[in-house]
Amino acid sequence: MWSEAPSVYGTSGNNVTVLMDNASQSGYAKSGDYTQSDSYHFPQVYSEHETGALHASNPSGQYVDGGHDFYATIWVDLAKYPVNYQSTAMGVNEVSVDLQDSWNIYAQMFLTMDSETNKANPGVTNAADKYDEILFEPVDTTNPFPNGVPAGWSNADVQALKSEKPFN
Image 1 (cartoon, rainbow, N blue to C red):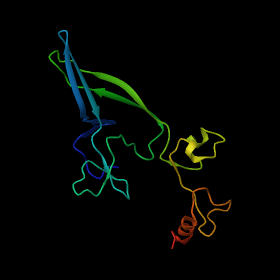
Image 2: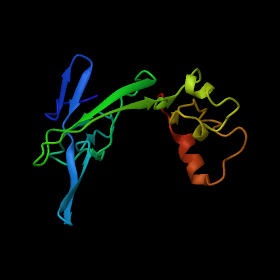
Image 3: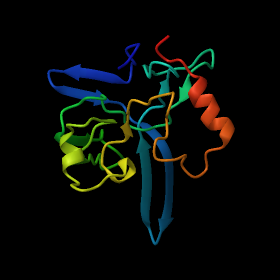
Image 4: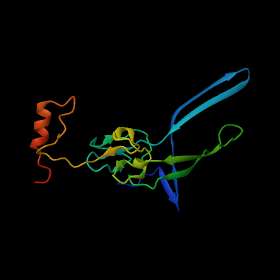
């Protein structure tokens, strides 16, 4: 979800073109041969704290640093997506690289009770052991822990949870 159209992205039909950033470059000569190593990563991304909207720049410093990671849409279809890495001609011999790969998007960001990736791990009750990342469950603020307070929760934590009125 881009709030602005970054100049490093271009689309054509179902294809998206991303201009990668050169992360590092090194080279050395040995016995008359020259070896060069280049490393690339995705462009810098910033995210709004509340909405998660993505930005290509952070002029006033109010966004969260998202690093150089790839962010898939939250509810993207689970599938293998073809990925193609291409370079421009490099060096005196004008060598270009064309690599074919795929990205397997196998889970959603949010776990739902009818999630297919939840069913992929039958019998697993701990949400951390499932593929989806975050599970939202309703909480009765008058009795948030009917089976007892979990380890690591202080009385102040429990009282803070009980005092919240999310629907008022």
